Amino acid sequence: MPEGDTVFRAAARLHAALAGKVLTRSDFRVPAFATLDLVGRTVDEVVPRGKHILHRIGDLTVHSHLKMEGRWDVYGPGDRWRRPAHQARAVLDAADVSTVGFTLGVLEVVPRADEAEIVGYLGPDLLGPDWDPALAEANLTADPERPVGLALLDQRVLAGLGNVYRNELCFLRGVLPTRPVGQVQDPTRMIALAHRLILTNRDRSARVTTGVDRPGSRFWVYNRRGKPCLRCRTPIRAGALGESDLTLRDTYWCPRCQS
Image (cartoon, rainbow, N blue to C red; front, side, top):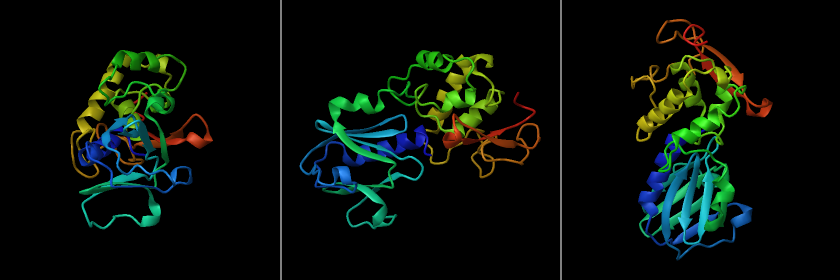
């Protein structure tokens, strides 16, 4: 699933393409909004909120979430789509640009005044203008018995982290994803590191947590099962962690560097 830095870049591209422009085409290819026509309306802005994208168009908001396979593409006049048309869920065009949302996990249009009903539950946004590390830490430590690997993925705690950052943060702080939050030393540093990592990667096309932008060396533990730890050469282990069977996500850790 795209994480907050990926969503931030997608929203920035959409904002650059559409902000201040009048829509010349709107095509929502989901039953609930198939008859909605936004032609003639001006796009005020496109903003990210955690892993969500909000097109603010007058008194309406087009809300989308990429989930696992979604993406928004930006095209020039006459450009060929990079995905098949049957995967398109939304098309929003202005005079000189076309934007297409493919296989969006969530797509809905709501009154702009009701945005809080769809994203108001989110915790502090790591890449938002109102980032609040103190509130994020309070949310993280609210349940001391909860595994830190679950708390970091909970968007109600802080918005924007996904499975890559969850695993890398636990490695960098030397804790197993299963360790209870109450046993994590210095959660302030974990929150600060989460912010620093995602902010550093916000404008990068290839996410890097090791400082080495080279295939096979970009991550400390993520997706490196059985490979030697980049610090101590111990084979990386893997498992799964989730609130339920439906939310299980892969975990990776070094049995020597993390405890």
